[in-house]
Length: 343
Image 1: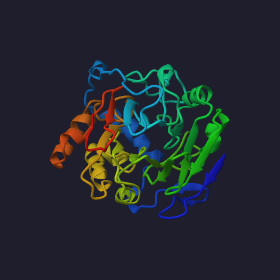
Image 2: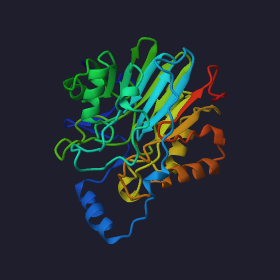
Image 3: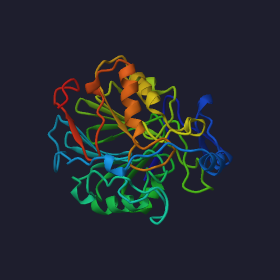
Image 4: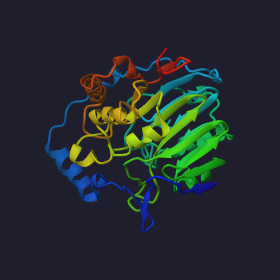
């Protein structure tokens, strides 16, 4: 188990044993703001209606099993921020979550609207697990234990402060990184990237561990998983240093009320802007919206994020075939030569 701080660029800002977002725009509301939201606004204001959960379809996954061909890049959306990536023969999971609730308890807390798009027992051999931060909808105790038992040789890459958590639950190959630090897993370069968020699993450990995104580079393919984040100034730098990306995974949900969620969750318009920032002058690349349609976490209707994402994408003049709005379980594949030929 190792924990390594970044060697260049803007690193995580840590003071007094707690991490902080380094940008002036990133100040987030504390417990008083949370009480204002849940005890006043939610009780005194009429919220938009949600659709029936049946509107969210579950597709039949079409990933390669046990592994993809050497030059292929495949993405399968399991749900929320959980994505199965296949970079050639490398099988990767982001923020894996297979439990019924995003909560420390399975009897209370946000419940799934849609079952996982890939059954846990149908997973291919997992080589790499990427964790963005420690919130319950991204770091699930039960899922970590299941994965560690089912795939004991998998490598786990986590932000600073989380190595002990996953190791105590059975993970063996664990490395914790600071922003901009890179490591290698065989022929794959794995880089920890900045994100604008916070961490906590109780009222007493706020910001004791870091939050991040991840960039992967392998056999000519480059992928960016933004994690859970508000809009911040570093997306362009991420694209310039680590791109251009064939595939980007940006969160587009859990954004209302804006006065409270703005610093930590992008809305669809900001996600499209972040995609444009991260393109590093390249006209290619695909965006996959994530972090919507699985758990009811905030006040926007559950089916609003994809509608607003499409509208923002169209308004930006981006090619519609570059926006892959996946159903739960849906797989899509980039042709072997480049991202300019999606299958």
